[in-house]
Length: 335
Image 1 (spheres, rainbow, N blue to C red):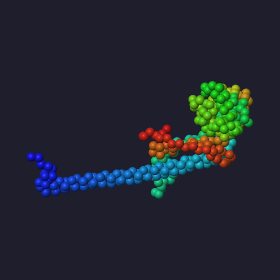
Image 2 (image 1 turned 90 degrees about the vertical axis):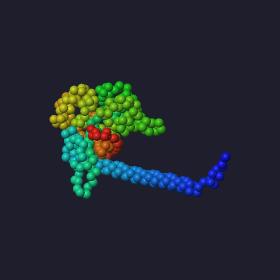
Image 3 (image 1 turned 120 degrees about the vertical axis):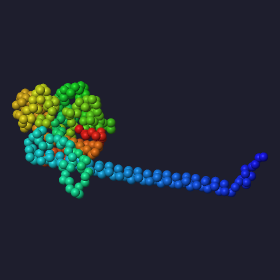
Image 4 (image 1 turned 180 degrees about the horizontal axis):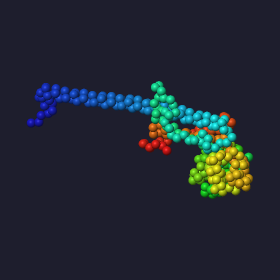
């Protein structure tokens, strides 16, 4: 006999239906509790992440500000060294002077007096740096004088290009584009004048040739002579048409014993003929422009800064600064 579901329910025992309803309610309550716990855990995790993120941002901002202060202090220290050098021995600039001694990487706590109230952040900070003579290299600005190419500077760069293996055609392209870049900016399509050696690609130099030139050339705001007391043998060789590389190397060796102070000192080493063959405006024994390179290591992060300083008498002014960040490999100290 077929029995309809209502009949079965009507004949069912009341206790069994009550137990079924209780089981459904209990399952719903358990599900609601699990959802509540999940929601609370999600909100707590989100709040914890936001708090962690805020701490990380604050720590990064604090490190950035501290790094900026330290590198600014190092730059001011460099300016003071150059000022004192001019006041104490302003006749020549050479590589035996205090400014030319590089600062090896040292813990910041070695420079500071740490007392009980001082922060321990400096324990993980390491500073290094160096002042270099910007006039130890050939200045590309020397090529252009009065909207025309300087013959003596052209010969010096031509000799340098030949020495490092760059075709003379590249110098011609460089000179033509440099004249356009430094000329009257009436043409909206005029070339942009470079500010750094790396930007010489704007003037048509190939990247490979730029890398070959970087140790020997610079870009300074005005024309400048080469300091014979700090220049490399390759640069010295370039500015003296009748001097070979071995003669330039003799000059470099001789100045280690006694820095040059006048033309007669140079003539005594290479001879009057070699000295007279060069334009006297291309070389000197003092420097006005210096580059300062600072390097700060905080844990595994390395912050570097490069600045150009101009010294006029006892006044030392900062012309430009550039800063970049690089990452060190874990467990490896930067060179």
